[in-house]
Image (cartoon, rainbow, N blue to C red; front, side, top):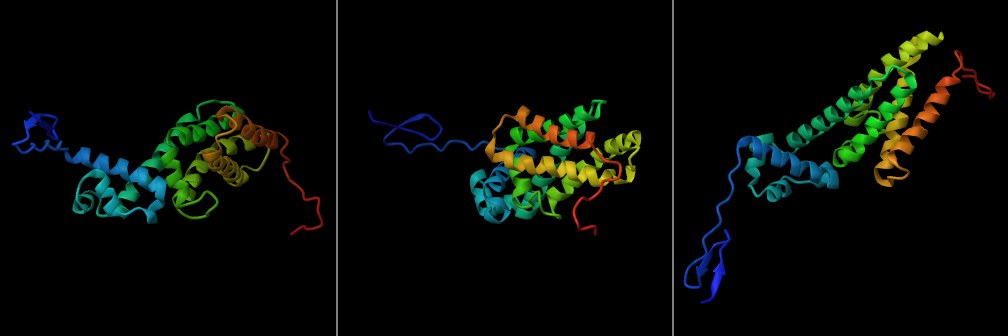
Length: 225
């Protein structure tokens, strides 16, 4: 007797219609998480503009109204994804700053960003795709500013201890965090050299620059203003 395999894996004779496999039902929380995971993957690959509600729904095996029910549309889903990634990166950076020595703090901050890029690659792609590191406004620029604020407090204490003006700490914090973030964006695709080596070179430039810092830097060219 010839048998057909039903969708649910059971066997039926050729004279019977295959029984449809039962769809696994999800709770509201499970469906929401599924949509977030699918949206995160699509936004990382295609960006916000290149991703549609239709595609998100199709990947999840639901109708478009389900996406609207949970997030109000693509914009709402994207906002939640971005917010989660920003909090994840900020938590990793601030949580890493535990050492007492300034140089080790720089190492920890560099490793935290590189760890995030390595572990949450899609998340970093989302943050820099629609809001590049070099852009002065947008989600990633806001995140960089938040991280710089954490570094600013550390630099302020170090500046004061060395007799420098602590009011300049915000400027140097932005410069340091921006340097690490831009390097991280490059390393996102390059992945060479290895993470520890990248961190070592970043700290080498930052620390030796800070170590030889002039209290009142001077310009040696003709232009003075």
